[in-house]
Image 1 (cartoon, one colour):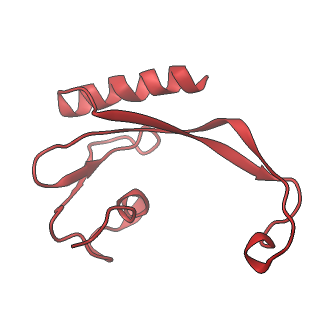
Image 2 (cartoon, rainbow, N blue to C red):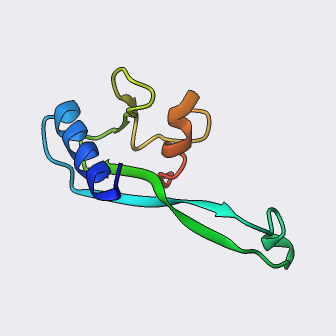
Length: 104
């Protein structure tokens, strides 16, 4: 699926899940390291390149909490309290995307 088609799909999924359009949609390409796995942070050389496949995310404000859903996981969105989100609050797959939310 092309990045544009993937962005359109997550926009539709977001609207179906939350009943409104997202405020933004972003795409991040996948990456392969041809050489240099685990050497970049040790001062070594690397040769990464982007892939046409990747991940797309739609986001928007939705009440006081934070909700995430994944097409790969199915089911309803996982919600977390936006003002009390600290490590250990959320477990499972949702802990990864929610770990990017700044704590208070």
